[in-house]
Image 1: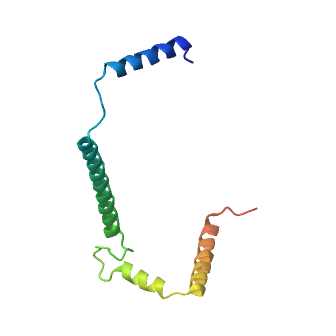
Image 2: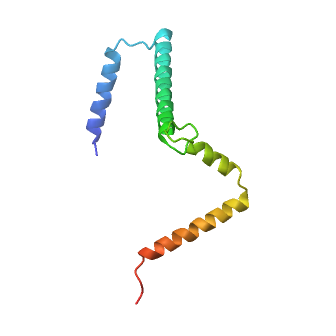
Length: 113
């Protein structure tokens, strides 16, 4: 912990620095420039994120925007297939997938003696 002498010395140095400085504040033009600069940086960051997202979608074969070389876009087929299902179909699909996964995992378990 700092002792009181160090704190007082730092406060005195800060006051001297402030008194010696001729800084009177920012002008309206400087504030506008800083705001424009921050807005431009935010826009560049947003564009970079959107471009990265588009690149990810173009590589994913299940995406409707896929640029994959498959003769039929798998993304459009998957989209149409999933849009045509109702709740009962989802339940049956999940149940069959769970049953198949359970059988596969049972092959890797050790057998009890």
